Image 1 (cartoon, rainbow, N blue to C red):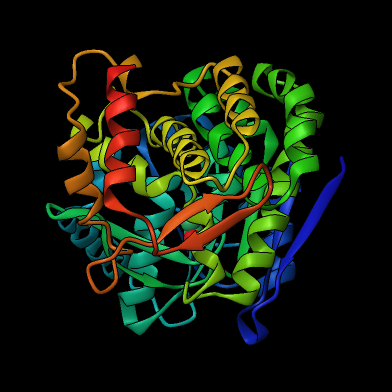
Image 2 (cartoon, rainbow, N blue to C red):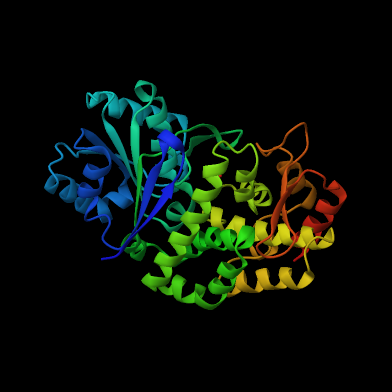
Length: 371
Ligand code: GLY
């Protein structure tokens, strides 16, 4: 069993991401080595509990951790709200936790974000460990310390930066994911190639389909490369005062699409990011930044990966370019009324700019909704 270690370098808040097959079965040993044998509470959702909780509990018991009873929440994005935060914090307090208790988040992005936020605010801050079980969580949301819940005003508007103490990414857990969820997570992997690693993008062009189909060597390599890219960015800009915003490539367009689609099954976050990345490249080409050939390459690869590349492909939604642009203006990255765009000078050459003519954005959106 090979395990790769990626270090997130943040002075006293530094931590390791362990990636490999069988990491979950050895979670007790890894936790003991990183944090000592401390009281802990696992938090997961009903779906993941049925798949991976017994293995985690057995590993913790074998390593001499007491307790291990879990707080089990409903699955789905609706769980990332105030009422479930309250339920979770009450659940933790009812278990008689103390400042030294470690909270273990077992699940996808919803569980990781919610549990991280609960850990940040309970007893003014508890240590927490991420055990991400989806591709999206392994390559993005479990790393970097963004935690939070949604408000009816928008996604992730209530939250805190709270870094985990350890991330355990078991590639084997990806085998239980629906193919559509794998593809949605894959969009975030492609993002790292587009931001700053053209060789990785080229590698994905030749290995991406095998990865999606289940090739565990390709999956491990992609998760490690993605985590390294994210760790490097977070290490130099933890609180997103600069470079970290590059990780939002495709997200400003994507969030507007998600709000319109209603955060449900019709459009998954990763699918919205895939369309958003195409739109960001189309806008870049329109502004004379990126070559048109790169736009075609990005689109072709996402299409081949089975991801949507235009809002017009998502049926049953009355897309409207003006309304999408209005949603973009409400993004939490808007500063002094201006949107920070992540555009690109080409594949692997993403840049940040606030200097974009809204008429050009509208023209891209109009083209996109027509299909
Ligand atoms: N998902 C983007 C970030 O963590 O900054």
